Length: 136
Ligand SMILES: [Zn+2]
Image 1 (cartoon, rainbow, N blue to C red):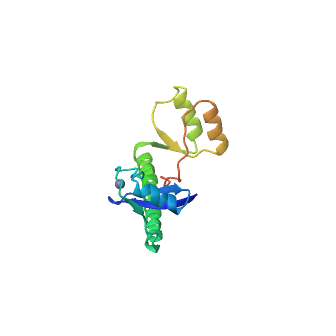
Image 2: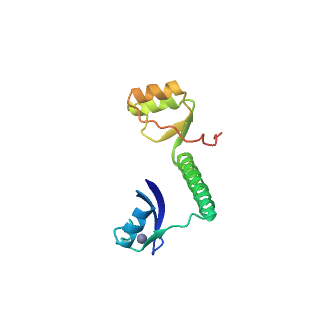
Image 3: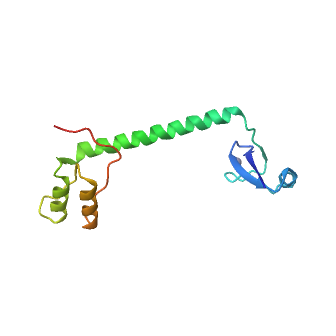
Protein backbone atom coordinates (compact mmCIF):
# COMPACT_ATOMS: atom_id res chain seq x y z
CA UNK A 1 0.00 0.00 0.00
CA UNK A 2 1.16 3.49 -0.71
CA UNK A 3 -0.23 6.68 0.69
CA UNK A 4 -0.78 9.68 -1.52
CA UNK A 5 -1.56 13.14 -0.41
CA UNK A 6 -4.43 14.09 -2.72
CA UNK A 7 -6.01 17.37 -3.60
CA UNK A 8 -9.32 18.15 -5.34
CA UNK A 9 -9.99 20.97 -7.76
CA UNK A 10 -11.41 22.99 -4.86
CA UNK A 11 -8.13 22.75 -2.98
CA UNK A 12 -9.20 20.24 -0.31
CA UNK A 13 -6.36 17.97 0.73
CA UNK A 14 -6.77 14.46 2.05
CA UNK A 15 -4.91 11.16 2.20
CA UNK A 16 -5.63 8.15 0.04
CA UNK A 17 -4.24 4.60 0.21
CA UNK A 18 -3.59 2.63 -2.94
CA UNK A 19 -2.27 -0.80 -3.82
CA UNK A 20 0.18 0.75 -6.24
CA UNK A 21 0.61 3.87 -8.29
CA UNK A 22 -1.24 2.25 -11.22
CA UNK A 23 -4.22 1.60 -8.95
CA UNK A 24 -4.35 5.28 -8.15
CA UNK A 25 -4.23 6.20 -11.84
CA UNK A 26 -7.03 3.70 -12.63
CA UNK A 27 -9.33 4.88 -9.86
CA UNK A 28 -8.63 8.47 -10.68
CA UNK A 29 -9.38 8.06 -14.40
CA UNK A 30 -12.54 6.03 -13.82
CA UNK A 31 -13.86 8.67 -11.43
CA UNK A 32 -13.94 6.37 -8.40
CA UNK A 33 -12.08 8.90 -6.32
CA UNK A 34 -13.94 11.78 -4.82
CA UNK A 35 -13.09 14.53 -2.40
CA UNK A 36 -14.09 13.75 1.19
CA UNK A 37 -15.11 17.38 1.70
CA UNK A 38 -16.94 18.50 -1.45
CA UNK A 39 -17.36 15.27 -3.42
CA UNK A 40 -15.48 16.56 -6.44
CA UNK A 41 -14.13 13.77 -8.64
CA UNK A 42 -11.35 15.97 -9.99
CA UNK A 43 -8.55 14.61 -7.86
CA UNK A 44 -4.84 14.84 -8.33
CA UNK A 45 -1.78 14.13 -6.28
CA UNK A 46 -0.82 17.02 -4.08
CA UNK A 47 2.71 18.17 -4.60
CA UNK A 48 4.76 17.51 -1.51
CA UNK A 49 6.67 20.74 -1.61
CA UNK A 50 9.02 21.89 1.14
CA UNK A 51 6.52 24.73 1.62
CA UNK A 52 4.15 22.20 3.20
CA UNK A 53 6.53 21.64 6.08
CA UNK A 54 6.66 25.34 6.70
CA UNK A 55 2.85 25.54 6.71
CA UNK A 56 2.65 22.66 9.18
CA UNK A 57 5.08 24.45 11.44
CA UNK A 58 2.91 27.55 11.35
CA UNK A 59 -0.17 25.53 12.19
CA UNK A 60 1.50 23.94 15.18
CA UNK A 61 2.63 27.22 16.62
CA UNK A 62 -0.82 28.69 16.00
CA UNK A 63 -2.38 25.80 17.92
CA UNK A 64 0.10 26.37 20.70
CA UNK A 65 -0.76 30.04 20.79
CA UNK A 66 -4.49 29.26 20.86
CA UNK A 67 -3.95 26.74 23.65
CA UNK A 68 -1.93 29.26 25.65
CA UNK A 69 -4.58 31.92 25.03
CA UNK A 70 -7.27 29.54 26.30
CA UNK A 71 -5.28 28.79 29.44
CA UNK A 72 -4.74 32.52 30.05
CA UNK A 73 -8.46 33.13 29.56
CA UNK A 74 -9.31 30.40 32.04
CA UNK A 75 -6.89 31.79 34.61
CA UNK A 76 -8.31 35.30 34.08
CA UNK A 77 -11.83 33.97 34.54
CA UNK A 78 -10.87 32.14 37.72
CA UNK A 79 -9.05 35.15 39.14
CA UNK A 80 -11.88 37.55 38.35
CA UNK A 81 -14.88 35.44 39.27
CA UNK A 82 -13.67 32.94 41.85
CA UNK A 83 -12.85 33.71 45.46
CA UNK A 84 -9.23 33.13 46.42
CA UNK A 85 -8.89 31.08 49.61
CA UNK A 86 -5.18 30.26 49.45
CA UNK A 87 -4.04 27.25 51.42
CA UNK A 88 -7.50 26.83 53.01
CA UNK A 89 -8.77 25.53 49.68
CA UNK A 90 -9.35 21.94 50.78
CA UNK A 91 -11.17 22.95 54.01
CA UNK A 92 -13.21 25.60 52.27
CA UNK A 93 -14.16 23.37 49.32
CA UNK A 94 -15.26 20.66 51.76
CA UNK A 95 -17.34 23.15 53.82
CA UNK A 96 -19.05 24.47 50.68
CA UNK A 97 -19.72 20.92 49.51
CA UNK A 98 -21.23 20.03 52.91
CA UNK A 99 -23.31 23.19 53.03
CA UNK A 100 -21.32 24.60 55.97
CA UNK A 101 -20.13 27.61 54.01
CA UNK A 102 -21.76 29.88 51.48
CA UNK A 103 -21.95 28.23 48.07
CA UNK A 104 -19.54 29.98 45.73
CA UNK A 105 -16.73 29.28 43.33
CA UNK A 106 -13.32 29.31 44.91
CA UNK A 107 -9.73 28.66 43.96
CA UNK A 108 -6.59 28.23 45.98
CA UNK A 109 -3.82 25.83 46.69
CA UNK A 110 -4.10 22.20 47.65
CA UNK A 111 -1.64 19.39 47.90
CA UNK A 112 -2.03 16.37 45.66
CA UNK A 113 -3.27 14.35 48.66
CA UNK A 114 -5.83 16.99 49.59
CA UNK A 115 -7.13 17.12 46.04
CA UNK A 116 -7.34 13.33 45.93
CA UNK A 117 -9.27 13.26 49.24
CA UNK A 118 -11.68 15.89 47.97
CA UNK A 119 -12.38 13.93 44.80
CA UNK A 120 -12.87 10.74 46.84
CA UNK A 121 -15.44 12.59 48.95
CA UNK A 122 -17.23 13.70 45.80
CA UNK A 123 -16.19 17.35 46.05
CA UNK A 124 -15.89 18.66 42.49
CA UNK A 125 -12.39 20.10 42.16
CA UNK A 126 -10.23 20.52 39.10
CA UNK A 127 -6.57 21.34 38.71
CA UNK A 128 -5.65 24.58 37.01
CA UNK A 129 -3.35 24.20 34.00
CA UNK A 130 -0.98 26.72 35.53
CA UNK A 131 -0.84 28.48 38.89
CA UNK A 132 -2.78 31.73 38.96
CA UNK A 133 -0.94 34.90 39.86
CA UNK A 134 -0.96 35.00 43.63
CA UNK A 135 -3.11 37.63 45.18
CA UNK A 136 -2.10 39.48 48.32
ZN1 LIG B 1 -12.99 19.09 -2.36
